[in-house]
Length: 264
Image 1: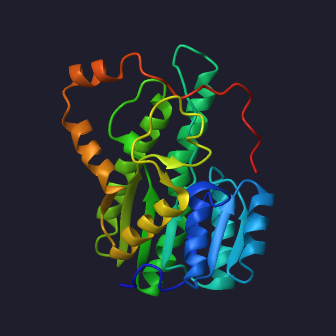
Image 2 (image 1 turned 180 degrees about the vertical axis):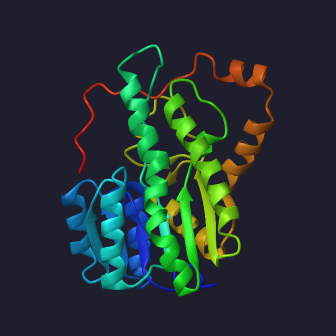
């Protein structure tokens, strides 16, 4: 089995936040890094900052055929990656009583769940042929319990966690490791409007280094940082009545105030 990072690296959602920090980290380690995103300009600036290291690809992870085509192009140009991060994700507040939020639910689920499937599907057969590799899915601590005002995001991350576990078992005898990483609070555009305390907040760069270490070790599941792992265990153990009382009346992630952006 090839160790994580022994060849090219492929990252979805790399135009900002954790994905961009992961791309910069692996580029600094000498890897050729394929980076996807919906916005061309941030990808171009990233590639310009790391000439010869970053291969930018403007594509929406919700588009399975486009992801398949970009993955095939990257493999032809750079070789099969030994490490793939399914990182693309969005976080928007939702409330079920608002009919218009149904579209937001769908967008979040399509990006945060199907986007992981679309990121990994093109690489499984090539990785098997190459002798192995590592698939890293970026989930979230939010996937451990339901969160008021963030039902779509929490549900999407819970689904991602379950999917990644299923995939890990499926790949057990193929030489491919499947790693689930659940970050806590990371200082990115996804969290800057959160109207509540965010304990153990990490910078994107710090989070990327920690996630890369998890990937290199091939751990099946990890919460980053370790302090949030303790919080996560407490969350899972809390009885429903206490969980409900703890979160009742707390700040909630803002809902979208404008129509969703077009696909990149």
